[in-house]
Length: 98
Image 1 (cartoon, rainbow, N blue to C red):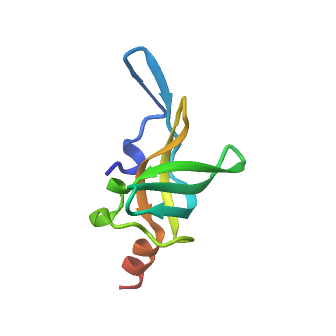
Image 2 (image 1 turned 90 degrees about the vertical axis):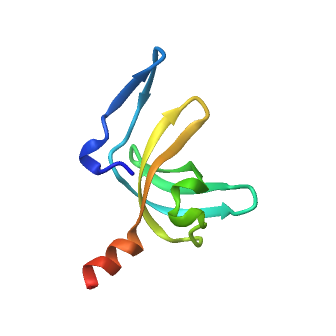
């Protein structure tokens, strides 16, 4: 998983420039375990937008419940926003309490 300081603002691969965000606050909109993906609503460039997320980014490949607060890094793609790194805000809050 990428740490906040490890994520470049943009990455060039095969002459395609991909722009990355820093960690953004978001909320799980929905995740379908059978289909293996879902969407996270993120505050991106000043407005709430949906970002595609693959279940492999979630701990133990288990879907997070709807409305779970998260922090994520998104990439702008031709198909829209895609989550490339994910941290569950609830896990961080539990760590801080211990």
